[in-house]
Image (tube, rainbow over all chains, first blue to last red; front, side, top):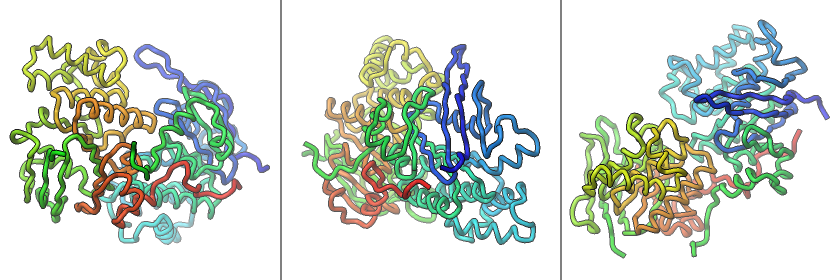
Length: 261
Length: 260
């Protein structure tokens, strides 16, 4: 087996809300291998977004360790952190909140290329055009404001920005949850296709078990700040052991073809 | 079956919009049915729901007719029609206690006294299965979770015992576990009270689990209407077939191959 890309050990984090301590993460450990998708599923408030934020260093854990690309990720600072950050990108549920509101489609992607010096300056414009085309956006959108395009198009821009820097891992936090079903399907196909081409790994976080199952090699189920079961997707679903997973399985809407009694 | 509302050739054009949001729509809503209105963003499903409820913005151009053979006269918003919106965080008043806003409909439309309305609010909060309804009546919206706020919005919408309840994307902002519970609650309430439910959603599977009939919208037009199971088993419109093809559940083949 290849060396894991990311190894998280015993991550804990509590928040204080109205004088009460809430444990958002309780000794969470996980690994992500190069090129795989780990699906992280759970209900609201289970700690999955906190985990995403700790892994991407948007917030610090109180205890625990993270190794990313062989480095002590939580100890990195300065130039080495900036260099390593390139390899861990993030896509959120609401891309509008994640962009500079004055940005244009092409500008968002060009900025990512510039900040991380991915390609020589002379090749930047061609690379922006290639990425915009690769995520399925018409070139006519290049100069449009990020506010003037649809939610699905905006999520494609967020994905183009994330993959522009050729990362090893992209953390997708409810990245398709706000989209129409047909748009959702096309974005999932795009993500899977990009993984096949580039070998990028995904941490795919969602409350929707059916969507997680469709794209994940392994699945981790989270409840009350802990990972309650984890394993290859088919095995976890074949023999669900936690109440949370059983509830999530029950809650998946199914198309009813027979009239109700 | 009696017809509650009858829409005929309804066309709705928002102010300054280049094209109608709803075009030539005809549809009867039967009293006591659960009618799901399905469609993607921009299909006109929310415009249809708002047109039925009389909640279109001022100076919206409306052509065609909307009649209410099942009512004595024109429907009164809040009294004959209850409306639950997608985001209870913005439809609830942040500075009014939960009890006050749930009781308001009963005070205004049923002429209850303040004290009687307060008691009614607690009973309504019990009906929507909120734990500790007396404590929640004294709480404010920000103190509740998204799912709890949606239960409060439903309690407020049914306070004046409306004939028609319109639920407009009420579960899209909630996780699947809470979504299932809210849908169960709506079905329980409308069946118990003999209410008519118009359930607007982009999720055909969710609708197929509860609706008697499904109306599929695309680009402002009604493209298919029929019994829920029949529409799912044998879709006639290409748009319906596309929605079915895009559905993902636990039987859908995974998009990925073996782990690397």
